[in-house]
Image 1 (tube, protein in one colour):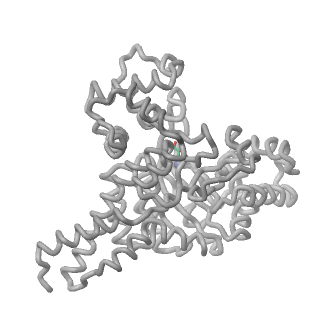
Image 2 (tube, helix red, strand yellow):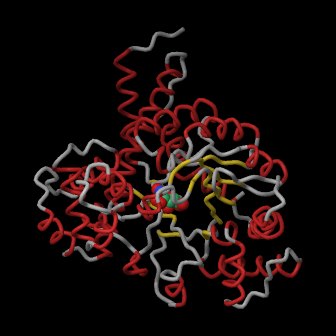
Image 3 (cartoon, protein in one colour):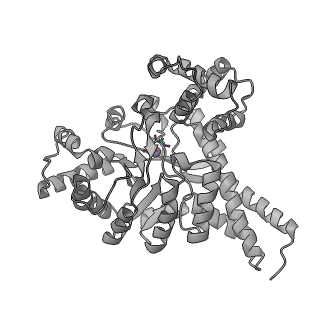
Length: 419
Ligand code: HDL
Ligand code: ZN
C-alpha cells in the first residue's frame, strides 16, 4: 500500500476545505422569501433571536415567572431581550442555534461579545432588504434559495396575485401539508377557491385536486412538491392521505416531471404552549417510503427524516431505489456532531449521489451560519474519504474535488429534479 505522506494529507484536506468554501450552494429547502414578499422575509437581530429553536431553548433557562402567556404577550424586541439575556448573557451560547447567532454577527463584522442589542438593531434597520440579501448570499456563497410556498398560507397567497419582479435566485416549492394531512378541512378551502371537490374519493375530486396542483405549480413556477409527515405515516393506506397520493399528487408529479419531497417524522405540537417551537420528533416506519418508491417507479422522491434512527434506514433504502434521493440533516439533526455522522454514513454508502444539507433557514442571516457550519463538517468528511483514497494510491485532482463538491451542493439535486 502506497505510504501517504502525512504532510500531503493535511495539504489535501486544506485543498478540500478551500474548494468546498468556494463552491456555491443551492439551498433546496428554506422558509425564506425574496424581498418582493416584503414582511415575509425575516431578517436582522430580533428575528434571529426569536427563532423558534431559541425560543424553546430559552424556556429552559428563563425564570419561572416568565410564563408562556407573558412571553407571547411581549413584543418581538422584548422577547429578543429575554432570549439574549437567558442564553447569551446568563449562560454561554454553546448550543448550535446560539452559536449560529454568534457566527452571523461575526461574519457581518459586528461585535458579538458585547452584544448591544440597541446598536445591533440600528445597524440592521439601516440595511435595505435588497442590499441585505446581496450581502448574505455573498457571505454564505448561496446561489439559489428554495422557498416554501403554501397556497393555504393566507399571508403569502395575496403576494402571488401581484405581478411583481421576483428575485430569480429564490425558487418556489409547492408545500401541500393541509391538502394531504387535513383533507376534511382542505375540501371547503378548495371549493371556496373554485375546485369542484367533495370529501368522497371520486374521479371528479381526483381530477380537481390535480387541477389545483397544476394551477399552483404553473402560478408559482415550483420545482417540486413537498409535505412533512408524522411518524405514523403509512403507505399504502386506505386513508384520505393514501388516496390523494395515489390519485392526485403522484400523477401530478409525473405529469410535471417533478420530484415529490417527503420530510418524515415530525410530531406536531408536542407542547402547544411553545407554538411553532412546540414540535417534536418520532421514528417513522420507512416501509412506507420503501413501498412509495417501489410502487411508483416513474416518480422521483426527495426524502429526509427527523429521527436520527431513521437516517441509516434512509441511506440503505436509497441504495435500493434510484428514484430516491436523500437530502439534508433536518432540524434536530442539524448539529455539527450529527451532520458529521450522517454525512460520513451517506458518503460511505452512497458516494456523492445525495444532497448533504438544506438550511431550513427562516431568517435571511441564518444562511451565513447554517452554511458555514455545514461546509466545515462536510469538507472534513469528504477530505477524509480522499485521504483514504490517497493512501491507496488514488490522488484526486482539484478538478475532481470541484466536480464532487458541486455535485453535493446542488448538482445532484438539480439533476435529480430534471429526471
Ligand atoms: O416542516 C418544516 O418544513 C420544518 O422545517 C418546520 O418548518 C420547522 O419549524 C423548522 O423550521 N425546522 O427547521
Ligand atoms: Zn422546513
